[in-house]
Structures are given as C-alpha cells and as structure tokens.
Length: 304
Image (cartoon, rainbow, N blue to C red; front, side):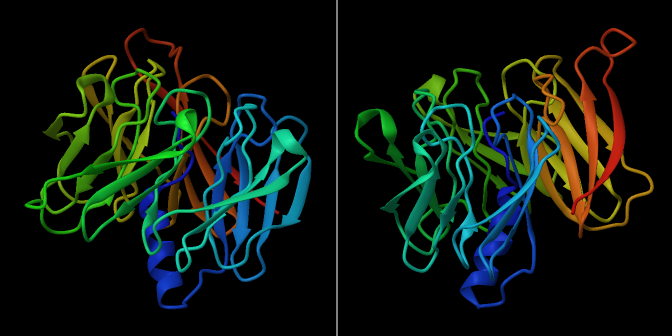
C-alpha cells in the first residue's frame, strides 16, 4: 500500500480551504521513522503544527511546518522515511522537508486548485508530485526518475457526476495507477500501468460509501474499499482471493474520518476511523487462525 491518506478526506480539505473554512485538526498517517509501521500524526492547518507519535519508541514530537496547506506527507527522497510536506491549493506550491537531507526545505509548483494525489508512479522508490483536476478530469504527474518531467492522463469527459480520485497499485507492478471512483453508480475507473494505461471500469462493491485504497490481504496489490459512516461498516475486495469482505465496527460512533495505514508492519493495510483524538484501528491479520479466512482486531488509541 503506497498511500497513507484518504483522498475523500483530502477533498474535504480542498473544499474547506477554498472557502476559508479550515478544519481544526486533520489526521495524517505515514511511516516517519522508517521501521515499516505507520505512525499516527495530526496536522493543524491554522498553526501549521504537525504532531507525530512514533511507533518505534512511542515518542511524541511536534514541529511547525506549513500553515493552511493540505498535508501530503510521503517519502519523496527514497530513504524509507516519510517527509513532512504540504500543498498550497491557492498557489500550487508544494513544500517538502526532506528527512534524508536533515529536513531541509524543498519546493516546487504544480497545478493550483487541484486535488493532490502523490505516489510512486515510476517505481523508483520516490514519491512523485501529482494532482487531479476534477473539472477537466486530468491527472498530472511529475516523475522524479526523469527530472520531474510532466505526464498527463485524462479520464473520459463523458464520465459525469462526482468523481473521486483513488490512486493505488492495483496490478502489483510497484507503480501507482491513476484511478477514480464514481459514487453515484459505484464504478471504479482505472488506468493500469501494467496494461499500458488502457481505461477499464469495474463495479466492485456498489454505489455510495467513502472510497479507500489499500493492500488488505498483503498480496502486493492494492484493493478498492468503501466505508459507510452511517452503518459503521467497511467493505473491501481481496485481489488474492477474489472475494469481498464486509466488517462491522461496533462501539464506534457514526461518522469520523477514515484513513489507511499498516500500523503493525505485517504487510496488510489496516483501517482507521478517527473521531477527534480517538484512533479506532482495525488490525488485519495475514495469518488468520482459520486458513482462507480473514481475522481482525479493533483497538482504540487516544492521541495526545
């Protein structure tokens, strides 16, 4: 699983920043210490404060980075540690604090007023800057392996209604594939890098819900997932077993912000629902007690 944030949540941030109605606290998940486990973090746009809880030693650290930005934390320098980063939707400025260079600041400019969709699109081990323009349905990527040259992919203009960008490595070739979800009809439209980016549309789970992407069965391929905040249920596909799984999360208040991460480092993505300072994590086991089954465990953490 190459991504650590919910694109739906990012879209809500985009809207909020556009109308100057900034959210108080935003959850962020990424591996900041390079131990193979996702760390929990929060970002406060108004102050630019990023607070991180490291899985390696339980240490809590804070830093002030970029005010009123969308958090786009990822590994941009290829040192296996996530770099704090922010995208300014109004100017298009993308600022990164590189962990491999003493957290020195680096910046670039990408299309403004777009949705950030960073990911490793060229399999060079470094996250590439990328955006999705909802109006033109255009995916713009700046590939780090070739001097950040620009590449564009356009989804069919005939695709109507709300379109949510949901990038992921769906074919397991270590390259992120551009993909969008259309909630009104429940279709996922993908451009797989392993199939020459030919457009294909699939109905996986059904319409509605909050789309997420993760490698939930640990087979090296990302799978589509949908979270229903009203029923507090989570449905996802297993590419390794060609089945659909549905999980209900009891004792959690409806709503919350869904986010994905591998918090135990077992190679399978875990779903997290964040309600204020409570992180409800469903740990997915890749070695269940009954062969062929999935098993999970819900644990709630209180973030400082």
